[in-house]
Each structure stands twice: as C-alpha cells, then as structure tokens.
Length: 169
Image (cartoon, rainbow, N blue to C red; front, side, top):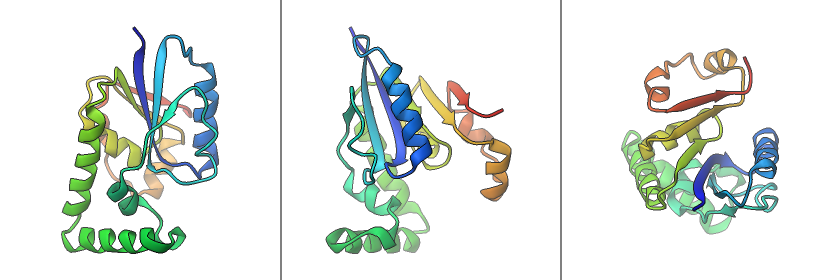
C-alpha cells in the first residue's frame, strides 16, 4: 500500500522553494508514495509544473486571506479585501478560523506524512493539522530569518513537529 504525503507551500510563484520541491518530487518513487501538494494560494507560474503528484484544489477563503491584494483581480480582489477586513476587525480570529477549517479538511485525507515545505505560513498552518508525523522544512538561514521576522520565538511552534529538516546550517 502506498504511503500518502502532503506538501504544503504558500504560493506557486516563488522560484527557489518551488524548484526545490520539483527536484525533490522528481526523486520520489511514485510506486511507493502518493504525493499531494496544497498551496495556500494556488496561483503562480509554477502551478502547472508538478508531475507525478496531485495539486489540491484551492480553499477559497484561505486563498483570499493569504493572497497579495494588489495581485488580485475581479471577484477575488473583492473577496480578498472582505476577508482581510474581517480578519483585522476580529483581531485575527476570523483568519484563524479559516486556517483551522482548511487544516481540518486536509486531515480527512489521512496522510502518512505532512510536510510544511517552508518556514513561516506553511509551518504555522501545518501545526494546526496536529499531525503525528509532521515535518518542518526550513530553506533559509534560520538566524537571518528570525532577525527579519522580528526575532519571534517559534520554539513552541517547532516543538509540534516530529522532524525538522534544515537546508542551511
């Protein structure tokens, strides 16, 4: 029986992380693993490049919450504005509910392993899944990342992970 693995990314428009994921997926034995990818905002030039896996459909409210407002058009731009205003008005509780709902939907797929494939939003999102075999994948020099992100203490967040993979020292 194949093991199911989920990779979570923020967007499909950041080159480095998406290229790293493509390279990794090209090396995974598709006879042993079923691979799914969930992008919190499934837009970008890399969305169509993934072979040997399934790209999951968008969670509309999560996409609206996480999307860059200036890059949206039409109905999505209006939804994005509405979700962001509601999130701000509720001091982040609306956004937390959206993330919890999306995480709950993904839990139903019964993945063997769930990988937060970058620091930041995917790591926080996957922690909401409360998966016993969660993996945090850090692509940056974490000391520099901490300095840029306001030197926040994420030890509690990373303690929820079974494994942490660091690309840099």
